[in-house]
Length: 476
Ligand code: CS2
Image 1 (cartoon, helix red, strand yellow):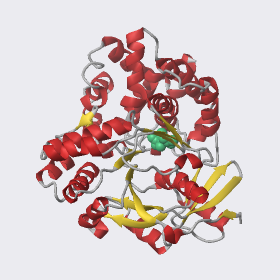
Image 2: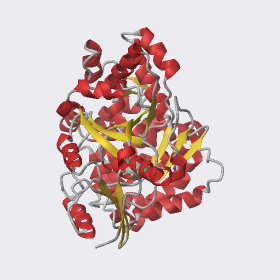
Image 3: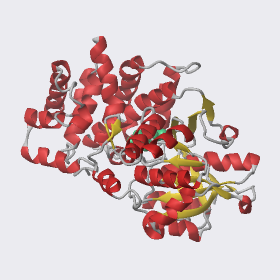
Image 4: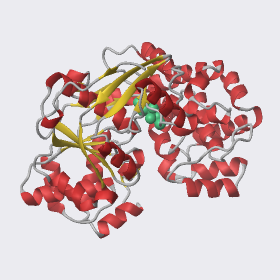
């Protein structure tokens, strides 16, 4: 049994001032830990309402049974540090409790901030704008008073605040998208503009959408990690979560009202987050996706398994330094070579068991910002990008659903139906071309650029004929 850092503040003082939409593993291990840490240092009444919209009602009920208290375990090698998190003051599930209950919580004048971890697809974007053809958005626009999407729900909650003369809110995106706050603002304004221009104007002048860069590697819990946590704790905690020790949060200092002193917990408030976001998205998430597709194809179960394969380890570092870093303006004070070394160390943390197939999910939503945007820059500058090409071609092979040894690979993606039908109908170049025609992933310009399409086709063929590891080795 390990010792646990218990809660040191008065939980009875907590009021529902923050609502967190998308209360899953990452929120538990990141946003809540910063928040809990702040409460330890400054007390106060900043309580959090933990919200989920679709799945996970039972998980929230389980958290209610534990009075909102759960354990976070930070793992490094054999070391496991436990702490209790006490900042959750209540839970709400759109289906369990009804959308009306959620909307009145957002409309509550005491609420100041909505934090979001709804994943890339939760914003219902196509490119950088709201996808008005999105099924959920269409349904919500047909019936804005009973919305189902995060965008529809926030907009309706804000409409109720406007009608009641309440203050605006800060909507703080904590998802891995570049300029996440700007995208969220744009999506909400576009949505509101479709049915209520007054609401659109009210949101624009009364709400704030700070951008933020979030970082903490938090694998989904498995039976094995649950047992490890329970054994260390000496009792079961079905709400607990294990993650790495590292955590970082850089937040644009733009709030509609008072902001919690998250800086006491190590968060950085800055005027502009863009450089931090791009650096993290391209170096960490970009190489994560590279390792996820190529590693899974080559039979690696986890990211740390990939780090035990010399060619993948060397390639991940080379991708970071030779293909991603040159596309960045590095934030002041950051040593990019050191940042890359630290990432390789974090990826090598064998206690994490972060599955390649987990990171491989939602590729259609992740490739554009992680890999294709930098490739656009390489094409403009006439630079070579062999490893990025393997990553994209690796995604294409992965989408066929089998690894090199014939094991089946899960395809979880909002575009999975379309991707599967391409895989069923086409092979080789025809298959690559069919995927390149997916405008939400590749846009119009890249596939029409021969230097892009030819390179992807060649990388796809090379992986197919030589295998992942030989192809990578030949490019190092
Ligand atoms: C990962 C991220 O699943 C993924 O796509 O790349 O969840 C990654 O672990 C986090 O962004 C780390 O901060």
